[in-house]
Structure formats: structure tokens, C-alpha cells
Length: 267
Image (cartoon, rainbow, N blue to C red; front, side):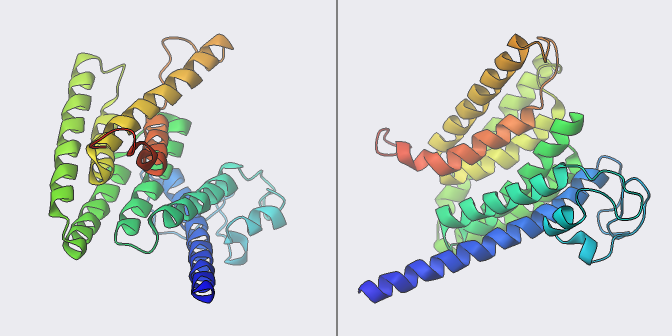
């Protein structure tokens, strides 16, 4: 029995390590998405290039994290500085995939949430940099999330969870749509488009996860915003990248929501 437990632990470590490496690679691709989608460029062609001199990068110059360190954060051709964003997104991608694989294990749910995590990472960085929540990314995530969730529902015979997820997605969309109609400056329509993605994912886990995620998103957003206002780095009327806080709320709710299950019935 002890040997079997050790084998299971070893397999889990190998699995999480593999998923971490995959997350780093996905993060490298997300950097392309973050740069090109706001500029309305193709994310497939041409190959990765230096934003400053437009020189196409070789395979060795495009290895996640490693290339940034080897090149000392500078383009090999024009010596322009390479943004810290690139390795940061890659590292965060690895962390998100590691956390997802640790939490869900080798299950049908895992692909659903890896897609959601990756999509929200791209949307968060884009919103942080330019206050945009591109519909191209939102719809791409939704078009992958839905069929993967249907596959999980079919494999696990959990259609009631899928129905709950659809209802939560619809309710959250209506709530955000209403808030946008009442005050477009308070909530942009990009966040309205994003709401079904969040509602589906959290609704699949349970209605309580939806409330917890929404609460955490606004709590984190309020604390950070008040801190920035107090330090005079932000004004009261300045827009905030709300998608960043919504994404954080979802991620924290996914990882911590089950801890509340023993305290609140029906969570």
C-alpha cells in the first residue's frame, strides 16, 4: 500500500510538472495574442518578431523564459529592451496550469478550467495595458469552454451541473448588462461580454462559487483601488481594469470555494 501511494504521488508530481511546462508554453503564445489582437493582427502569421525592428525571431530566440534570460532582456538585432511582460506572462501561465492540475487532477474538468485560466490571463493583461477586453479573445474562450464543458457533462453524466452553469452565465450576463446600461462608465461592455465566461465556469462548480467569485473580485478591486487613490496614483474618476479583478475573483473562488462547503450548505 505504501509503495502504491508513493507511485501515485510520483505520478502526480510528474503530471503537475508537465502541465506547468505546458502552461509556460501557452503563456508564450498568449504574449502573441496580447500584442496582436488589440492591433487587429493575425495571431498565426507572421512568425514572432521583435516589436521594435520587426526582425523575425529564430526558434532559439523564442524559448519561453530562457531566451529572455540569455538575451539579457534585449533584442539581439536592435538591442531594444524586451518588456518584462513576456517572462511574467509565461511564469503566471505555468503557475495557473500547475494550480489547475493540482486542484482538479486528471479529470474532464481540467481542460475546461485551463482554457478559462489561459483566456483570462490574456484578457487581464490586455485590460491592464490598454483598458480593453477584446471580443475576439472572449468569444474564442467561450467557443472552447462550452464544448469542453459539454464533453465533461457527457463523460461524467453531470448534466444538472451544466444546466446550473448555463443559468449562472445568463444571470451574470443580465446583471452586467443592466449595470452597463445604467452606467457605461462604471462598467464597460467588454466586461459584459466576459461575464458568461465567468458564470459558466463558476456555475459549473456551484452557485456559491459564483457569489464567492463576485465578492472576491470586488473586494480585491476595492482594496487595490482605495490604496492607489490614497497614494495619489489614481483618481476617483479613473477607470480600472475590472477584468483583472474578475479574473482574480474567479481564480481564488475556484481554489478556495470548496473550503467553505463545510460551513455553508448548498455551496
